[in-house]
Figure 1 (cartoon, rainbow, N blue to C red):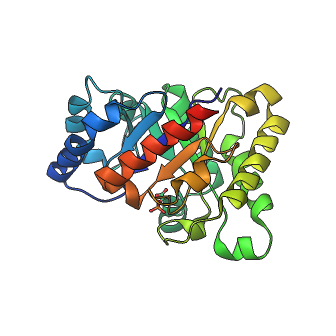
Figure 2 (tube, rainbow, N blue to C red):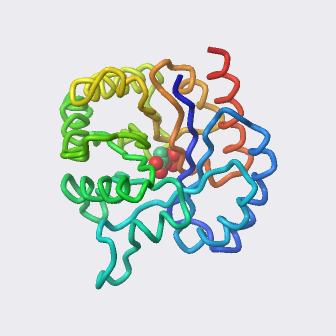
Length: 254
Ligand code: PEP
């Protein structure tokens, strides 16, 4: 059985002080929820103090990005080992990285490989833009993103995929549960083609895009959806906690 996951992507929000306060506001209640993998991905500058705060907690820490080189003259970048020292997870290929920082196929592939090499668990984001969706190209786009991100990678152990339709991210306009379930089922089918049926059945695939406490159930109750990557709503302690709690209730009924 796949363990459900709720991951919070804080994006470029919170100062160190605000990040510490947010963790303190949700840590105790989140720790009461078991059997759901709970991940928070604060900005880089807050990872050190938050790691300290989470020492005895079941909440896992993730970074929002990495650079693929091991070390060296890459001013402003953060290496896989630096992140692995602090975090268990790392988000790779988020649509905002693709859109604003020009990240695409080969770079994302190098980042996934570099993360796995140091035992970081990537949360690989894939998803189509609005015009691609409207042109009926969702499946072509996600399969191409999947293939290029995983090229040459034999072992997917530790990898989570997040299907995030770009038109649903930060817009308040989520996909429907059925739409998301169908595309995630398609993604799983393609993992089976690229790897094996067993690997496809084991891999965790999340939905992301305007998930909040009010609509989380619509996604979580779908059989192919193993949880959510949550942006805006993960910055509110009560919202995030509610999504995690609802996930535990729904997934553990099954
Ligand atoms: C995200 O950042 O991955 C995301 C899904 O954002 P939001 O929940 O705000 O749409």
